[in-house]
Image (cartoon, rainbow, N blue to C red; front, side, top):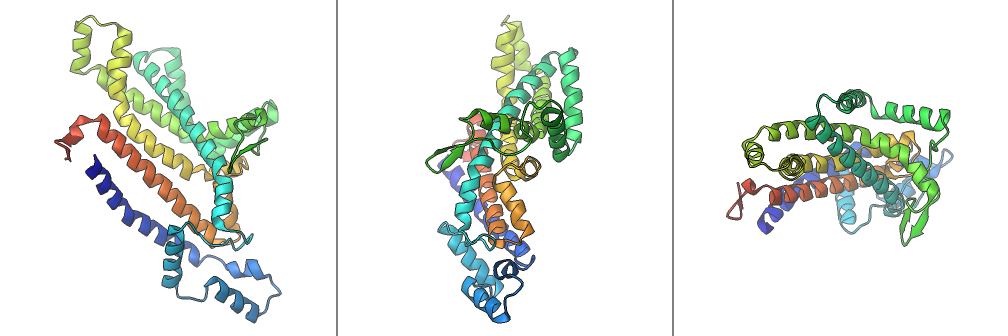
Length: 325
C-alpha cells in the first residue's frame, strides 16, 4: 500500500508542475494588471516603478519560478486588484465553496444511489420512469439554465427561498459557516441542487447499469438458490459490488463539483472562490487566477489519489502479493 501511494504521489508531481505552468502562462499575457493598480493618470515612471516592485519587469521564466517557489511556502503573491495577499482572499472564500460542494456531493450520492437501486429493481414502476425521464432532461440542460429555472420557480414565483447570497454566517475560528443558521440553510438549498443535478444523474444511471449487471451474475443466482431473502441479496450482495466503480466515478465527480462550481456561484452570487475567480478575470488579476487554478488542481489530484487508494483497498484484483498489476 505504501509503495502504491508513493508511486501515485510521484506521478502527480509532473501534472501539478505542468498545470501551474499552463495557468501562469495563460493568464500572464491577459490584460494589463498594472493599469488596474496605478490608474489612468499614472506616468510611465510610476508604471515602471510598480513593475519593478512586483517583479513584472523580470523575464517570464523568472516570474514563473518565483511563483512556484513562493507557492511552496504558501505565498501566492498580492492581488493586483485589492492589494491583499491572495492566500487570505482564497481562504476567506474557500469555506463557502467547500460547504456548497460537499452538500451537493452528499445530496447527489444519496439521491443518485437510492434512485439507481429503485430503477434497477423496479424498472417498470412509475417512479423509475419519472426518474429516468427527469434525469435525461437534467443532463441535457446546461447548469446555468437549471439554476435560472430554480430561481424563477422557487425564488421569484413561490418566494420560498432566496435567489442569491449566503445568508447569515457564523465564524468558528477562521472558518465561516452558514450551516448553523436558518437563512444559511435557506440560501444553500437552490445552488446545492443546481450543482448536484448533473452528478446525481450520472450516479443514478451508473448505479442502475451496474446493479442490473450484478443482478444477473452467478453469485446472485447462487444466493437466490440458497433461499436468502431479497433484501439481503439486494443490499448486501448486489449493492456492495455495484459500489466499487461508483466510488471511483463519485470521487472524480467531487473534484469536478469543486472545479466547476464557478458557474453555479456566478448564477446565485454565492461568495465562494469560483465567484472570486470570475471577478479576477474582469480585472486581469493574474495572481488570483493562477493561484485558483493551482489550488483547484491540488484538490482535484488529492481527491483522485484518495479514490485510487480506496479503490485499491476495495478491489482485491488490484493486489497481488502487495504488487499492483
